Image 1 (cartoon, one colour):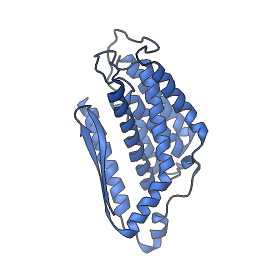
Image 2 (tube, rainbow, N blue to C red; image 1 turned 90 degrees about the vertical axis):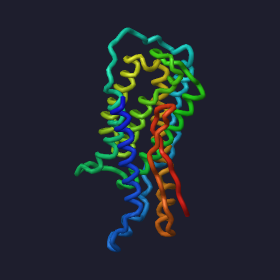
Image 3 (cartoon, one colour; image 1 turned 30 degrees about the horizontal axis):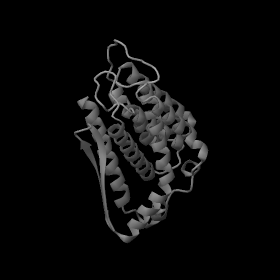
Image 4 (cartoon, one colour; image 1 turned 180 degrees about the vertical axis):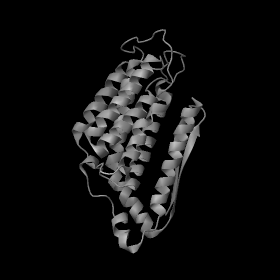
Length: 252
């Protein structure tokens, strides 16, 4: 558990440092135009209503199972802990695949990191806010933080980011990992089935929202670079909910 928290904070710190470096780096005049210009408008950043079908259905079905739990999946099983770390694997793949030669991607590293940070912030806000509002007891300990599953949301967020950036070829593998994480949360008696369904919907929706916001963020940071100003983006940790988060500040 401590290792997974350390890994989460380390990934956040590295991501924030990379975003800050990408925004503050001064390129040579020969390449300035190509680095400062926002990424071309991509299909992945365009809002399409059909994208909402899966996350809306998953969240709706998951919400319907609050208190009733849909299916009682509890059992006397030996708990596995690898899901605490592997939940971040799709997000790591999202950041790292773009560095591999011949792997086609839609955005530069700065934009990918910006989308990743935005998705994580949205997902964390939705999960932690809903947990405090619903207060669903966990099947193993009774702690009132069961709905929705944060581990599942993290994994599916990363999987959807991979799909949006690299296509279904890599996205299918990322989704397989995410589905495995969701199954392990049920196997370990940490979550009810409906918690996992809702967590998957929240994760996918968070990634999609981050990509819808990406063109706006690129324009915002492009203007800030020309006008001057400072940005601070730092990882944080909520000791009450034991959840990582982000602190953000900007001067204009």
